[in-house]
Length: 473
Image 1 (cartoon, helix red, strand yellow):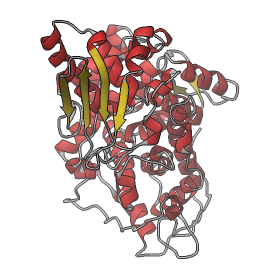
Image 2: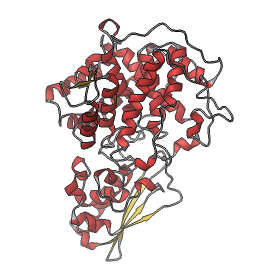
Image 3: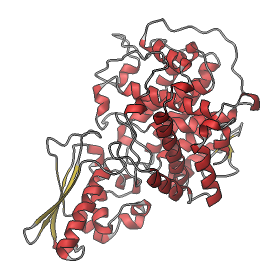
Image 4: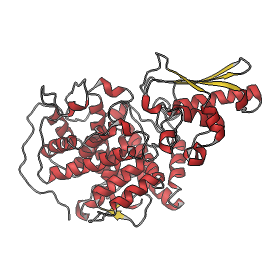
Protein backbone atom coordinates (compact mmCIF):
# COMPACT_ATOMS: atom_id res chain seq x y z
CA UNK A 1 0.00 0.00 0.00
CA UNK A 2 1.28 3.46 -0.82
CA UNK A 3 2.66 5.62 1.99
CA UNK A 4 5.07 8.55 2.20
CA UNK A 5 8.15 7.70 4.26
CA UNK A 6 9.64 10.11 6.78
CA UNK A 7 13.09 10.76 5.31
CA UNK A 8 15.57 13.65 5.60
CA UNK A 9 15.75 15.94 2.56
CA UNK A 10 18.15 18.58 1.37
CA UNK A 11 16.17 21.79 1.30
CA UNK A 12 16.32 24.39 -1.42
CA UNK A 13 18.14 27.59 -0.46
CA UNK A 14 15.76 30.29 0.67
CA UNK A 15 14.85 33.19 -1.61
CA UNK A 16 15.38 31.37 -4.89
CA UNK A 17 12.97 30.96 -7.77
CA UNK A 18 12.86 27.19 -7.29
CA UNK A 19 12.19 27.42 -3.55
CA UNK A 20 9.39 29.93 -4.19
CA UNK A 21 7.66 27.45 -6.51
CA UNK A 22 8.11 24.64 -3.98
CA UNK A 23 6.68 26.83 -1.22
CA UNK A 24 3.72 27.74 -3.41
CA UNK A 25 2.93 24.10 -4.21
CA UNK A 26 3.14 23.13 -0.55
CA UNK A 27 1.24 26.13 0.85
CA UNK A 28 -1.62 26.55 -1.66
CA UNK A 29 -5.05 26.21 -0.04
CA UNK A 30 -8.52 25.59 -1.46
CA UNK A 31 -9.86 28.91 -0.23
CA UNK A 32 -7.47 30.64 -2.63
CA UNK A 33 -9.42 29.29 -5.60
CA UNK A 34 -11.91 31.92 -6.69
CA UNK A 35 -15.31 30.94 -8.05
CA UNK A 36 -14.10 31.87 -11.55
CA UNK A 37 -11.05 29.61 -11.26
CA UNK A 38 -13.16 26.75 -9.89
CA UNK A 39 -15.68 26.97 -12.70
CA UNK A 40 -13.08 27.34 -15.46
CA UNK A 41 -10.98 24.46 -14.17
CA UNK A 42 -14.02 22.18 -13.87
CA UNK A 43 -14.86 22.98 -17.50
CA UNK A 44 -11.31 21.94 -18.36
CA UNK A 45 -11.61 18.70 -16.37
CA UNK A 46 -14.90 17.75 -18.04
CA UNK A 47 -13.64 18.57 -21.53
CA UNK A 48 -10.38 16.70 -20.97
CA UNK A 49 -12.21 13.58 -19.79
CA UNK A 50 -14.48 13.70 -22.85
CA UNK A 51 -11.54 14.14 -25.20
CA UNK A 52 -9.78 11.23 -23.49
CA UNK A 53 -12.84 9.01 -23.78
CA UNK A 54 -13.22 9.56 -27.52
CA UNK A 55 -9.44 9.29 -27.84
CA UNK A 56 -9.68 5.76 -26.44
CA UNK A 57 -11.13 4.73 -29.80
CA UNK A 58 -7.97 5.62 -31.75
CA UNK A 59 -5.22 3.37 -33.06
CA UNK A 60 -2.45 5.20 -31.20
CA UNK A 61 -4.30 4.69 -27.91
CA UNK A 62 -4.71 0.99 -28.69
CA UNK A 63 -0.96 0.68 -29.33
CA UNK A 64 -0.16 2.43 -26.04
CA UNK A 65 -2.63 0.31 -24.06
CA UNK A 66 -1.34 -2.98 -25.47
CA UNK A 67 2.20 -1.89 -24.61
CA UNK A 68 1.29 -0.93 -21.04
CA UNK A 69 -0.58 -4.18 -20.39
CA UNK A 70 2.70 -6.02 -20.95
CA UNK A 71 4.23 -4.37 -17.89
CA UNK A 72 1.42 -3.40 -15.51
CA UNK A 73 1.73 -4.99 -12.08
CA UNK A 74 -0.10 -3.11 -9.32
CA UNK A 75 -3.23 -2.58 -11.41
CA UNK A 76 -5.37 -0.13 -9.43
CA UNK A 77 -5.96 2.81 -11.80
CA UNK A 78 -8.69 3.16 -14.44
CA UNK A 79 -8.26 3.59 -18.18
CA UNK A 80 -10.36 5.90 -20.35
CA UNK A 81 -13.09 4.10 -22.23
CA UNK A 82 -12.13 0.63 -20.95
CA UNK A 83 -14.38 -0.31 -18.01
CA UNK A 84 -12.88 -3.17 -16.06
CA UNK A 85 -9.34 -2.54 -17.32
CA UNK A 86 -6.86 -1.37 -14.66
CA UNK A 87 -3.17 -0.52 -14.92
CA UNK A 88 -0.47 0.57 -12.51
CA UNK A 89 -0.81 4.30 -11.67
CA UNK A 90 2.03 5.51 -13.85
CA UNK A 91 1.01 3.42 -16.85
CA UNK A 92 -2.64 4.43 -16.46
CA UNK A 93 -1.55 8.07 -16.43
CA UNK A 94 0.53 7.48 -19.57
CA UNK A 95 -2.24 5.68 -21.44
CA UNK A 96 -4.88 8.26 -20.54
CA UNK A 97 -2.52 11.08 -21.48
CA UNK A 98 -2.02 9.48 -24.90
CA UNK A 99 -5.80 9.20 -25.29
CA UNK A 100 -6.25 12.87 -24.41
CA UNK A 101 -3.91 14.08 -27.16
CA UNK A 102 -4.51 11.29 -29.68
CA UNK A 103 -6.82 13.46 -31.83
CA UNK A 104 -5.33 16.86 -30.91
CA UNK A 105 -8.77 17.60 -29.44
CA UNK A 106 -7.56 18.81 -26.02
CA UNK A 107 -7.59 22.32 -24.61
CA UNK A 108 -4.95 24.97 -25.32
CA UNK A 109 -3.74 27.84 -23.15
CA UNK A 110 -1.75 31.02 -23.74
CA UNK A 111 1.24 31.00 -23.82
CA UNK A 112 0.80 27.90 -25.96
CA UNK A 113 0.52 24.53 -24.24
CA UNK A 114 -2.05 21.79 -23.57
CA UNK A 115 -2.42 22.09 -19.78
CA UNK A 116 -5.16 19.66 -18.76
CA UNK A 117 -3.90 16.50 -20.47
CA UNK A 118 -0.54 16.82 -18.73
CA UNK A 119 -2.08 17.00 -15.26
CA UNK A 120 -5.49 15.34 -15.05
CA UNK A 121 -4.46 11.71 -15.89
CA UNK A 122 -1.77 11.79 -13.18
CA UNK A 123 -4.24 13.01 -10.58
CA UNK A 124 -6.89 10.47 -11.57
CA UNK A 125 -4.35 7.64 -11.30
CA UNK A 126 -2.88 8.89 -8.02
CA UNK A 127 -6.30 9.30 -6.43
CA UNK A 128 -6.94 5.57 -6.91
CA UNK A 129 -3.47 4.63 -5.69
CA UNK A 130 -3.86 6.03 -2.19
CA UNK A 131 -5.25 3.84 0.63
CA UNK A 132 -8.89 4.37 1.69
CA UNK A 133 -8.11 6.35 4.84
CA UNK A 134 -5.97 8.89 2.93
CA UNK A 135 -8.09 9.48 -0.19
CA UNK A 136 -8.00 13.16 -1.19
CA UNK A 137 -11.33 14.97 -1.28
CA UNK A 138 -12.76 16.49 -4.41
CA UNK A 139 -11.65 19.91 -3.20
CA UNK A 140 -8.10 18.59 -2.67
CA UNK A 141 -8.23 17.23 -6.23
CA UNK A 142 -9.43 20.54 -7.67
CA UNK A 143 -6.71 22.44 -5.82
CA UNK A 144 -3.99 20.05 -7.03
CA UNK A 145 -5.27 20.40 -10.60
CA UNK A 146 -5.04 24.18 -10.35
CA UNK A 147 -1.57 24.02 -8.79
CA UNK A 148 -0.47 21.99 -11.82
CA UNK A 149 -2.00 24.57 -14.17
CA UNK A 150 -0.45 27.46 -12.27
CA UNK A 151 3.06 26.00 -12.39
CA UNK A 152 2.75 25.42 -16.14
CA UNK A 153 1.48 28.94 -16.74
CA UNK A 154 4.16 30.61 -14.63
CA UNK A 155 6.92 28.62 -16.33
CA UNK A 156 5.58 29.65 -19.76
CA UNK A 157 5.97 33.28 -18.71
CA UNK A 158 9.70 32.82 -18.07
CA UNK A 159 10.48 33.31 -21.76
CA UNK A 160 9.07 35.49 -24.54
CA UNK A 161 9.72 32.54 -26.89
CA UNK A 162 6.88 30.64 -25.22
CA UNK A 163 4.28 33.12 -26.45
CA UNK A 164 4.52 32.01 -30.07
CA UNK A 165 3.60 28.75 -31.80
CA UNK A 166 6.51 26.43 -30.90
CA UNK A 167 9.33 25.48 -33.25
CA UNK A 168 11.84 23.41 -31.23
CA UNK A 169 10.04 21.42 -28.54
CA UNK A 170 6.43 20.60 -27.75
CA UNK A 171 5.51 22.71 -24.68
CA UNK A 172 3.44 20.12 -22.75
CA UNK A 173 6.41 17.76 -22.83
CA UNK A 174 8.35 20.38 -20.87
CA UNK A 175 6.09 22.58 -18.73
CA UNK A 176 3.49 19.80 -18.59
CA UNK A 177 5.93 17.39 -16.97
CA UNK A 178 6.70 19.89 -14.22
CA UNK A 179 3.01 20.75 -13.92
CA UNK A 180 2.18 17.09 -13.42
CA UNK A 181 4.91 16.76 -10.80
CA UNK A 182 3.60 19.84 -8.96
CA UNK A 183 -0.02 18.68 -9.08
CA UNK A 184 0.82 15.19 -7.86
CA UNK A 185 3.11 16.52 -5.14
CA UNK A 186 0.22 18.66 -3.93
CA UNK A 187 -2.24 15.75 -4.00
CA UNK A 188 0.23 13.60 -2.03
CA UNK A 189 0.81 16.41 0.51
CA UNK A 190 4.57 16.43 0.00
CA UNK A 191 6.73 18.80 2.02
CA UNK A 192 8.17 21.96 0.50
CA UNK A 193 11.58 20.27 0.15
CA UNK A 194 10.01 17.25 -1.54
CA UNK A 195 8.11 19.56 -3.92
CA UNK A 196 11.39 21.22 -4.83
CA UNK A 197 13.01 17.89 -5.64
CA UNK A 198 9.97 16.73 -7.59
CA UNK A 199 10.37 19.75 -9.89
CA UNK A 200 14.07 19.04 -10.30
CA UNK A 201 13.50 15.37 -11.10
CA UNK A 202 10.74 16.28 -13.56
CA UNK A 203 13.08 18.65 -15.39
CA UNK A 204 15.39 15.71 -16.07
CA UNK A 205 12.47 13.79 -17.60
CA UNK A 206 11.15 16.61 -19.78
CA UNK A 207 11.24 17.38 -23.49
CA UNK A 208 10.09 16.17 -26.92
CA UNK A 209 10.94 17.58 -30.38
CA UNK A 210 8.43 19.32 -32.63
CA UNK A 211 9.60 17.11 -35.52
CA UNK A 212 7.23 14.43 -34.20
CA UNK A 213 4.20 16.68 -34.57
CA UNK A 214 1.64 15.28 -37.03
CA UNK A 215 2.73 11.69 -36.27
CA UNK A 216 1.50 8.97 -33.93
CA UNK A 217 4.40 9.88 -31.62
CA UNK A 218 2.99 13.32 -30.75
CA UNK A 219 0.35 11.98 -28.31
CA UNK A 220 3.23 10.32 -26.44
CA UNK A 221 4.40 13.82 -25.49
CA UNK A 222 1.34 14.36 -23.30
CA UNK A 223 1.29 10.74 -22.12
CA UNK A 224 4.90 11.00 -21.00
CA UNK A 225 4.42 14.43 -19.43
CA UNK A 226 1.66 13.26 -17.12
CA UNK A 227 3.31 9.90 -16.40
CA UNK A 228 6.81 11.23 -15.78
CA UNK A 229 5.57 14.10 -13.63
CA UNK A 230 3.75 11.54 -11.48
CA UNK A 231 6.91 9.45 -11.30
CA UNK A 232 8.95 12.52 -10.33
CA UNK A 233 6.65 13.20 -7.39
CA UNK A 234 6.69 9.56 -6.31
CA UNK A 235 10.50 9.48 -6.48
CA UNK A 236 10.75 12.69 -4.45
CA UNK A 237 8.37 11.23 -1.87
CA UNK A 238 10.70 8.22 -1.57
CA UNK A 239 13.77 10.36 -0.94
CA UNK A 240 15.27 11.11 -4.35
CA UNK A 241 16.89 14.53 -4.56
CA UNK A 242 17.63 16.87 -7.46
CA UNK A 243 19.21 20.25 -8.04
CA UNK A 244 17.40 22.68 -5.69
CA UNK A 245 18.06 25.55 -8.14
CA UNK A 246 16.57 23.85 -11.20
CA UNK A 247 14.35 26.82 -12.13
CA UNK A 248 16.93 29.52 -11.37
CA UNK A 249 19.12 31.07 -14.03
CA UNK A 250 22.62 29.91 -13.09
CA UNK A 251 25.29 31.06 -15.61
CA UNK A 252 27.30 28.20 -17.04
CA UNK A 253 25.01 25.46 -15.70
CA UNK A 254 21.60 25.33 -17.33
CA UNK A 255 18.61 23.99 -15.47
CA UNK A 256 15.14 24.62 -16.85
CA UNK A 257 16.75 27.44 -18.86
CA UNK A 258 18.15 24.77 -21.22
CA UNK A 259 14.82 24.84 -23.05
CA UNK A 260 14.93 28.56 -23.87
CA UNK A 261 17.50 30.93 -25.36
CA UNK A 262 15.74 33.82 -23.62
CA UNK A 263 15.07 32.99 -19.97
CA UNK A 264 14.00 35.35 -17.21
CA UNK A 265 12.64 33.39 -14.24
CA UNK A 266 10.57 35.13 -11.59
CA UNK A 267 9.78 33.95 -8.06
CA UNK A 268 6.27 32.76 -7.35
CA UNK A 269 4.85 34.35 -4.22
CA UNK A 270 3.56 32.10 -1.48
CA UNK A 271 -0.20 32.21 -1.89
CA UNK A 272 -2.15 34.34 0.53
CA UNK A 273 -5.82 34.97 0.73
CA UNK A 274 -5.55 37.34 -2.24
CA UNK A 275 -3.42 35.19 -4.53
CA UNK A 276 -4.73 35.33 -8.09
CA UNK A 277 -4.26 32.18 -10.15
CA UNK A 278 -3.39 32.72 -13.80
CA UNK A 279 -6.58 30.97 -14.87
CA UNK A 280 -8.48 33.88 -13.30
CA UNK A 281 -7.23 36.31 -15.96
CA UNK A 282 -6.29 33.96 -18.81
CA UNK A 283 -9.12 31.66 -19.84
CA UNK A 284 -8.66 28.52 -21.93
CA UNK A 285 -9.41 27.64 -25.56
CA UNK A 286 -11.62 24.61 -26.20
CA UNK A 287 -11.63 22.99 -29.65
CA UNK A 288 -14.83 22.31 -31.55
CA UNK A 289 -13.20 19.69 -33.79
CA UNK A 290 -10.12 17.45 -33.39
CA UNK A 291 -7.22 19.34 -34.94
CA UNK A 292 -4.38 21.71 -34.09
CA UNK A 293 -5.67 24.97 -32.61
CA UNK A 294 -4.46 27.02 -35.58
CA UNK A 295 -6.86 25.13 -37.83
CA UNK A 296 -9.84 26.70 -36.08
CA UNK A 297 -9.12 30.12 -37.56
CA UNK A 298 -8.92 28.89 -41.14
CA UNK A 299 -11.96 26.63 -40.78
CA UNK A 300 -14.14 29.49 -39.52
CA UNK A 301 -12.79 31.74 -42.30
CA UNK A 302 -13.49 29.00 -44.86
CA UNK A 303 -17.04 28.48 -43.59
CA UNK A 304 -17.64 32.22 -43.81
CA UNK A 305 -16.48 32.47 -47.42
CA UNK A 306 -18.35 29.26 -48.29
CA UNK A 307 -21.61 30.94 -47.28
CA UNK A 308 -20.74 33.93 -49.46
CA UNK A 309 -19.98 31.59 -52.36
CA UNK A 310 -23.29 29.73 -52.03
CA UNK A 311 -25.15 33.05 -52.01
CA UNK A 312 -23.16 34.05 -55.09
CA UNK A 313 -23.48 30.83 -57.10
CA UNK A 314 -26.54 29.14 -55.62
CA UNK A 315 -24.52 26.12 -54.48
CA UNK A 316 -20.94 25.16 -53.73
CA UNK A 317 -19.44 24.55 -57.19
CA UNK A 318 -15.66 23.90 -57.04
CA UNK A 319 -15.40 24.19 -60.84
CA UNK A 320 -16.03 27.95 -60.53
CA UNK A 321 -12.98 28.40 -58.29
CA UNK A 322 -9.63 29.18 -59.91
CA UNK A 323 -7.51 29.71 -56.76
CA UNK A 324 -7.97 29.32 -53.02
CA UNK A 325 -5.80 31.85 -51.23
CA UNK A 326 -4.91 31.22 -47.58
CA UNK A 327 -3.41 34.01 -45.50
CA UNK A 328 -1.85 32.33 -42.48
CA UNK A 329 1.11 32.82 -40.12
CA UNK A 330 4.48 31.21 -40.76
CA UNK A 331 4.57 27.87 -38.93
CA UNK A 332 6.26 25.07 -40.81
CA UNK A 333 4.79 22.06 -39.01
CA UNK A 334 1.17 23.08 -39.73
CA UNK A 335 1.80 24.18 -43.32
CA UNK A 336 1.20 20.87 -45.10
CA UNK A 337 -0.08 21.18 -48.70
CA UNK A 338 -0.95 17.48 -49.25
CA UNK A 339 -1.31 15.54 -45.98
CA UNK A 340 -1.34 11.76 -46.36
CA UNK A 341 -2.39 10.63 -42.86
CA UNK A 342 -4.95 11.63 -40.25
CA UNK A 343 -2.24 13.14 -38.02
CA UNK A 344 -0.83 15.20 -40.88
CA UNK A 345 -4.35 16.32 -41.80
CA UNK A 346 -4.95 17.55 -38.25
CA UNK A 347 -1.85 19.73 -38.72
CA UNK A 348 -2.59 21.15 -42.19
CA UNK A 349 -4.00 24.62 -42.81
CA UNK A 350 -4.67 23.60 -46.40
CA UNK A 351 -6.55 20.40 -45.61
CA UNK A 352 -8.79 21.94 -42.95
CA UNK A 353 -9.69 24.93 -45.12
CA UNK A 354 -10.58 22.68 -48.07
CA UNK A 355 -12.50 20.19 -45.94
CA UNK A 356 -14.58 23.04 -44.53
CA UNK A 357 -15.21 24.44 -48.01
CA UNK A 358 -16.19 21.07 -49.45
CA UNK A 359 -18.31 19.72 -46.58
CA UNK A 360 -19.51 22.81 -44.75
CA UNK A 361 -18.09 21.46 -41.49
CA UNK A 362 -15.07 19.76 -39.93
CA UNK A 363 -15.56 16.94 -37.41
CA UNK A 364 -14.32 13.53 -36.33
CA UNK A 365 -15.15 11.98 -39.69
CA UNK A 366 -13.14 14.58 -41.60
CA UNK A 367 -9.90 12.81 -40.67
CA UNK A 368 -10.79 9.28 -41.75
CA UNK A 369 -8.71 7.66 -44.48
CA UNK A 370 -11.60 7.77 -46.93
CA UNK A 371 -12.21 11.46 -46.30
CA UNK A 372 -8.56 12.47 -46.56
CA UNK A 373 -8.02 10.75 -49.90
CA UNK A 374 -11.16 11.92 -51.73
CA UNK A 375 -10.50 13.01 -55.29
CA UNK A 376 -12.67 16.12 -54.97
CA UNK A 377 -10.69 17.19 -51.89
CA UNK A 378 -7.39 16.66 -53.70
CA UNK A 379 -8.66 18.83 -56.54
CA UNK A 380 -9.36 21.64 -54.08
CA UNK A 381 -5.93 21.22 -52.47
CA UNK A 382 -4.36 21.64 -55.92
CA UNK A 383 -5.89 25.13 -56.08
CA UNK A 384 -4.48 26.37 -52.76
CA UNK A 385 -1.90 29.15 -52.63
CA UNK A 386 -0.48 30.35 -49.32
CA UNK A 387 0.56 33.85 -48.28
CA UNK A 388 2.15 34.94 -45.00
CA UNK A 389 1.22 38.58 -44.26
CA UNK A 390 3.67 40.31 -41.92
CA UNK A 391 0.87 41.25 -39.53
CA UNK A 392 -0.26 37.63 -39.17
CA UNK A 393 2.10 36.37 -36.47
CA UNK A 394 2.39 32.80 -35.20
CA UNK A 395 0.80 33.54 -31.84
CA UNK A 396 -2.52 32.16 -30.64
CA UNK A 397 -3.43 35.52 -29.12
CA UNK A 398 -2.70 37.56 -32.26
CA UNK A 399 -3.05 35.42 -35.39
CA UNK A 400 -5.92 35.36 -37.86
CA UNK A 401 -7.06 33.19 -40.72
CA UNK A 402 -8.20 34.45 -44.10
CA UNK A 403 -9.55 32.40 -47.01
CA UNK A 404 -10.16 34.05 -50.39
CA UNK A 405 -11.80 32.37 -53.39
CA UNK A 406 -10.52 33.75 -56.71
CA UNK A 407 -13.16 32.78 -59.25
CA UNK A 408 -12.77 32.19 -62.98
CA UNK A 409 -15.20 35.07 -63.48
CA UNK A 410 -12.67 37.46 -61.94
CA UNK A 411 -14.69 37.96 -58.76
CA UNK A 412 -13.04 37.47 -55.36
CA UNK A 413 -14.86 36.34 -52.23
CA UNK A 414 -13.14 36.58 -48.84
CA UNK A 415 -13.75 35.20 -45.37
CA UNK A 416 -11.68 36.18 -42.35
CA UNK A 417 -11.57 35.00 -38.75
CA UNK A 418 -9.82 36.92 -35.98
CA UNK A 419 -11.34 34.98 -33.08
CA UNK A 420 -13.00 31.59 -33.50
CA UNK A 421 -15.79 30.29 -31.27
CA UNK A 422 -14.04 28.39 -28.48
CA UNK A 423 -11.09 30.81 -28.19
CA UNK A 424 -10.55 32.40 -24.78
CA UNK A 425 -11.86 35.67 -26.21
CA UNK A 426 -15.05 33.90 -27.35
CA UNK A 427 -15.49 30.97 -24.93
CA UNK A 428 -17.73 28.00 -25.57
CA UNK A 429 -21.03 28.32 -23.76
CA UNK A 430 -21.91 25.78 -21.09
CA UNK A 431 -24.36 24.24 -23.54
CA UNK A 432 -21.71 23.89 -26.27
CA UNK A 433 -19.19 22.39 -23.86
CA UNK A 434 -21.71 19.85 -22.58
CA UNK A 435 -22.73 18.99 -26.15
CA UNK A 436 -19.08 18.31 -27.02
CA UNK A 437 -18.57 16.19 -23.90
CA UNK A 438 -21.71 14.13 -24.46
CA UNK A 439 -20.82 13.56 -28.10
CA UNK A 440 -17.26 12.46 -27.28
CA UNK A 441 -18.20 10.27 -24.32
CA UNK A 442 -21.04 8.57 -26.23
CA UNK A 443 -18.48 6.70 -28.34
CA UNK A 444 -17.57 4.51 -25.35
CA UNK A 445 -20.05 5.09 -22.49
CA UNK A 446 -23.81 4.70 -22.04
CA UNK A 447 -25.93 7.76 -21.35
CA UNK A 448 -26.35 7.14 -17.62
CA UNK A 449 -22.58 7.01 -17.08
CA UNK A 450 -22.09 10.16 -19.14
CA UNK A 451 -24.58 12.09 -17.04
CA UNK A 452 -23.04 10.71 -13.84
CA UNK A 453 -19.60 12.06 -14.83
CA UNK A 454 -21.10 15.48 -15.60
CA UNK A 455 -22.68 15.53 -12.12
CA UNK A 456 -19.46 14.41 -10.43
CA UNK A 457 -17.38 17.13 -12.07
CA UNK A 458 -20.02 19.78 -11.44
CA UNK A 459 -20.04 18.88 -7.73
CA UNK A 460 -16.36 18.05 -7.44
CA UNK A 461 -15.79 20.26 -4.37
CA UNK A 462 -18.34 18.27 -2.37
CA UNK A 463 -16.86 14.79 -2.96
CA UNK A 464 -15.40 13.18 0.14
CA UNK A 465 -13.37 10.80 -2.05
CA UNK A 466 -12.03 12.16 -5.34
CA UNK A 467 -11.24 8.67 -6.65
CA UNK A 468 -14.98 8.39 -7.40
CA UNK A 469 -14.29 10.41 -10.55
CA UNK A 470 -11.60 8.02 -11.82
CA UNK A 471 -13.76 5.01 -10.92
CA UNK A 472 -16.61 6.40 -13.05
CA UNK A 473 -14.54 6.24 -16.23
